[in-house]
Image 1: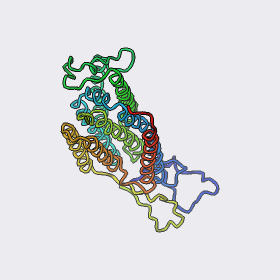
Image 2: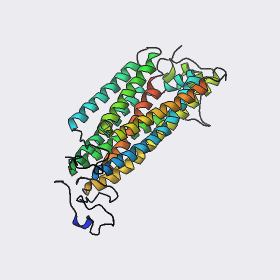
Image 3: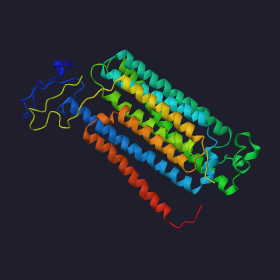
Image 4: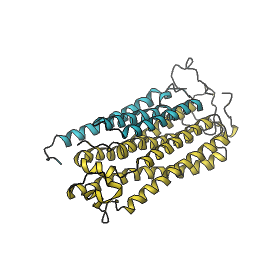
Length: 258
Length: 115
């Protein structure tokens, strides 16, 4: 263990009764005593993080299922409402989020090779692209607010009942009033899914600020990578949710079946 | 980087019971993954503007699945993890598939009228 930091203060001065004395016990500052080895601790940490992410898959999965089902039930309403979303903005946001994920992946690498400055830079870039994503999302939400496309009392079906009167929807087929009401279901799911995704990003950005502060103090450049690695797993998971949200909400309804 | 605890003198399998290998992915490999993801994003946007009938959603979801798999395997290092973690990830997705298939079967097979 040539590059391990041996801290005299943390080695076991008073061995517990029944403890195995046969193999040498090297304690790293980040190594908890209830793990046999650093590998075991790392493995247990990754395993726990993955279990958490599986519960997240189930959480988002419920909403994905609702989308699948209601899209089948209210197909014309979903197609018409979906076509009010901006594909260029969605595509730009996808690229921004993938770039943020790439910066995060590099962050894990720089933590592994113990390069403090580049780790901080990578984390800052991850944050910047994450904020940019939310910025684009803000303008998308604002447009929906102005068009009265937020479900609730002020929701307006005018654009879907009489699309030819509006510049944005002049090529869309008109919906019957009862079907036009169902566009609210699409927008409800749109705001629920992208909103939950955005909430995950906001939580992630909060954690990033905290990790940057700790990384600046050099806490993750001496072989202790677990927090960076596990946060990376979380951030990439949030990426994956968007990778599926983008085609489902923005792309697949461009050419509805007649 | 990684110090391999040799399993040779470890009959009780305590030093590294999961046989975990600590693998570090290089920036070059990350860049390739990043480029692949950007290209697939471009492809899926381009494909959305063509009328392919029923194949529009199929292709879009296929590309999204490939992108998701690439992120899980390389950005999330799943390909370098122990069998325990690989199996955990796979079983989670399998469970999710079972859940949505069973629920959908129920919804689709009831005579609730056509909407």
